[in-house]
Each structure stands twice: as structure tokens, then as C-alpha cells.
Length: 328
Image 1 (cartoon, rainbow, N blue to C red):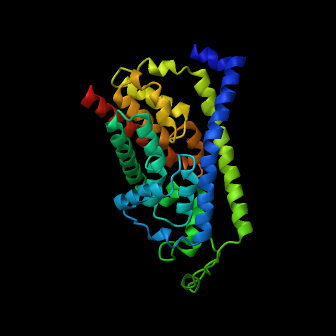
Image 2 (cartoon, rainbow, N blue to C red; image 1 turned 120 degrees about the vertical axis):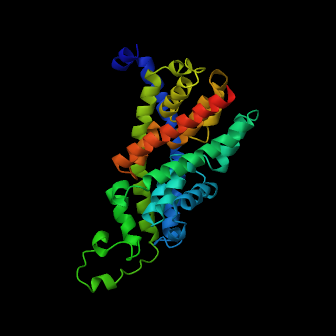
Image 3 (cartoon, rainbow, N blue to C red; image 1 turned 60 degrees about the vertical axis):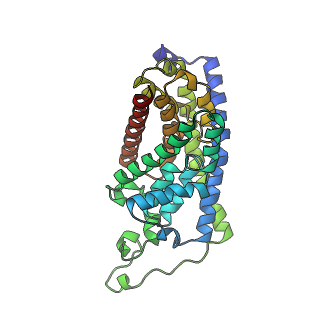
């Protein structure tokens, strides 16, 4: 039946998909705009990234620091991508930037308050959601740090990052500065002054349009699949200890709702699913969903993105299954 629906969507399904698509965009675009604005302000305040480069570079310490930045820079999974990209482009340690990218969508006051408001009778969820998000960020960051920067970051982002890194870490050839000879290695590039307001606005507008186009693509795919695949298919497995976790993970991937409101969506089916499945839904969506996957492509190479997907899915499955074994 699903295959037939995919081949021949009805007019009613297309209308539903259009409504869902609009809802996803209205929900996500303000957070994307906030993220781009924060990234643009960071570029104006610290154009060479000297403050960001002082963040801890160790795997655990760096990831924890980046995760805690979510309290200072609250954003959902759409808004945190441009901020994380600015952190990386400014030369911030990889661990700190990845810790922010993966944990900030949950570890921020807006999401924690929304989770408490939706589930005041489940205090364990208010504890396990931020803790699980932090564990995911630490695990995925540690895994990605095993790869070299050239195998992690997209070429344009890597080029931006190399321009601000110290000469002791990156050669001039890697900076693509075009300088050769022994005397060139002794001459650091001139420190740029603060960008002009017009240049900042132009850079921010271009980044918003680029990321916005990717967000439109991801939202369109999410809306179409969410319409053509009935949600009841996932909820029918709600009481099976393992299958419930897997089904709610797939549902989180398809629904693609922002982390600031996903707890209220989950409230509608919380009584139909296992505790582990509910936790899995609230952990996976803020890190990976269909609309954010396209945005991640502006930061990570395809291989690194595939590793991230597999690692996040495995970590969420383990935590959801563990909770079911503990409570059921």
C-alpha cells in the first residue's frame, strides 16, 4: 500500500504535504535566521577567531565546553548549524564546535523548559534527555576526531578555517596563500581589521540564502514522506521493547519537527509507546532529521556525515533499549 501511495499521491495527500511543508518552514526559518545572525555578529566581534581558538581542544573538555555553549546561544537543530560553521571557520577546536553542533539543540533553556512543561509527571525524562544528548555529543565527537580535518570538513569550510589557524599548525601552502620560499614561512599574513558593515550584511545574507535553500529542500522531502507514510505504521509497534525504539527513531527522522516543540508533539502519543521509544524520539530528532541533513552537508563531508548518522542512531538505540530493559 505504501509503494502504491508513493507512486500515485492523491490531491488530498499533496495538499497535506504542502501544509506540512509550510509548517516546517515557518517553524524552522526563524531559528535559522537567529543562527545566521549570531554567526554574523561573532564574525564582526572576533574576525580572526582569537577568543574561539582559546576554547579547550581536548576531546572531552572541548565537547563539554561546546555543549554548554548551548545555554548561551540557544538554537534548535536548524539555527545551530550556521553557528557551528562559524566556530569552525574561526578556528575553534573541532571538539568544541562538534560538541555545540550535536548537543546545543537540547542543552538550551528553551528546550529544557518545553520538555518540563510537556512532561511534568515524568521527571526521569527531564534528566535523561539532556544527559543522553550530552553522551551522544561526546561519543560522536570522539569518533569524528579520529579522522583528519581534511576528511571531516567540506572544502570551502576547510579553506576558511585554514586562513585563521596559526602558521605553526597550518603551512602557507595549505592556506593557499600563493607564497613560496623560506622567507614566506616567516611572514604571517596581515591581521584583517573588523569587516565593514556592508560586507557583514552581504556575507550573512548569502549564508542565509544558501542554508535556506537547503532547508527548503529538506523540509520538502520531510513533508512528502511524512504524508505518504502513515504515522500509525510506527505507532503500531509502540509496545515492543526494541521495535518501538526503532519505529520512533524513524518517525523522528521523518517528522523533522524543531527541538523547541517536539516534546509537545510527543505528548500526543506518549501513552502509546514505551519509555525508551519516547526518549529515542526526543534524542534523535534534535540531532538528525531530514531537514537538518541537508544543512549538515555545509559542514561535513559525505563520509563524515555517514559516520555521524550511524553513530547517533546506534547511540540512541542503545539508550532507548537500556531504558526499556530497566523500566519494563
